[in-house]
Image: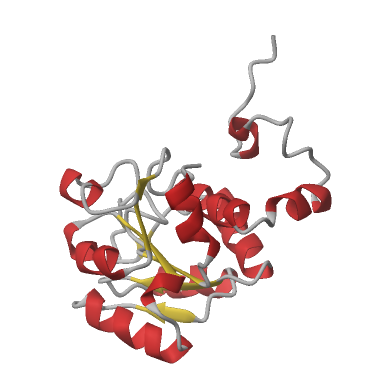
Length: 193
């Protein structure tokens, strides 16, 4: 991890995530009755549970309204859910006030142009691998994983590593964080040969 990125991540107290295209792959499935479905990555969810366990709060900030998002947030014990946010920067400022945090203590992960004002304001900004190019040009870091396919988990792990909490997590889950390839930690199969 680059030194400037590690320094920014050390002070993160709150992780804010866009939903569609970040926690999901951006696709929305609707049935004939208009019911909406989204796919969420279970490893991203576990990363969010771990990061909260180690003291980093999580909030969701999305421009759309969806019952599915509310249900997923409840499943992950995320209380700060802001849906229908047409001006994400204004909502971001309200979140800072609510938590009494400076922008430097907040990380934001986005994927689309509506996220750029928040990405520019957050102390640490990241875009998923399949974000729009203009978004990628506005961030501190671009994840190696796509939205809905491990990008959230990747950022959670980076924050925990930068804050020195990774060895404790390795001990809890009984793995050697120095010997296991990161690809295995992210659920990719190692070559068995």
